[in-house]
Length: 121
Image (cartoon, rainbow, N blue to C red; front, side, top):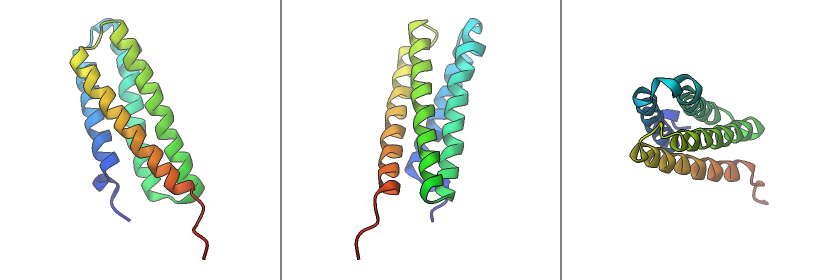
């Protein structure tokens, strides 16, 4: 089993948390606590669930992967709110959305592999 920090999904998640933190720092004070912190929290939760998914198998792993996908959807929604409020620069929003899509694709693929039936002998 590879260290979770060596997984491509973890690298993307780590980069995503970095951009989410930049978004929070640059965000107008009016939206930092209500919107910005939710974006960062969802990204941090995804990163934690990536490590947990790597450390588990079977149903537990699938549950962690579903959690990643739930936080990915929530972070995407909060980023959309931030963009609509003009609380995030479009360039930062675009980078974050691309990374969130990558995390979604990787987690979905990992989940499909985890829940696939074992090959017949």
